[in-house]
Amino acid sequence: MRPLRIALTKGRLETRATSLFQTMGLDCKHLIKKGRKLILPVDDFEVVLAKAADVITYVEHGACDIGIVGKDTIVEYDPEIYEMTDLGFGKCIFALACKKGSDFYSGYTEKVVATKYPNVARKFFEGKGMDVKIIKIEGSVELAPLLDLADAIVDIVETGKTIKENGLMVIEEIMPISARVIVNIASMKLRKEEIESFLADVELAKEIIE
Image (cartoon, rainbow, N blue to C red; front, side, top):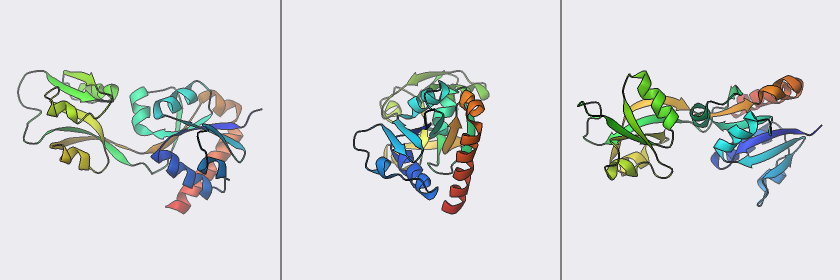
């Protein structure tokens, strides 16, 4: 049987998760000095480095048993997985922002909202009973109101600095976000003891870090 495979979001979550693994007593030397490798041994586990959306895909379809990914990606893709643990790092918020001085909720014309997260935005406005036109943006979503492409944006806000520097303001917080541990549904049945042992070690390490 292959080792338990953990899909890990590249970047900041990767760095924080590596610290968590070290606190769990795992040997992370290959992960720290990874070079260009994307599949790395970490003690008895295999760690797969991937973009957030791909972490969801690999875990949902069983290519990986466990994943570490932001709640933002989970909410956007709504995958069939188990969401097990809030790791408490990678904290930020989903927020609605618009140009300073503008009143997004006034008037009767259809509002246009730009976002990298169309499903999150759609659910948010459906919950308000509002019809909005949603435009998906891949890059710097703050540009859309500045170019008069959109009335507002739905985006992740960590410090709010980028929003302010681009002449925008947060008008509503949508939901808090942090890193989560997710598990493949079939793996949870087939390798229950191994996964539960890993999750228990994660919880102990979280307490030490906190």
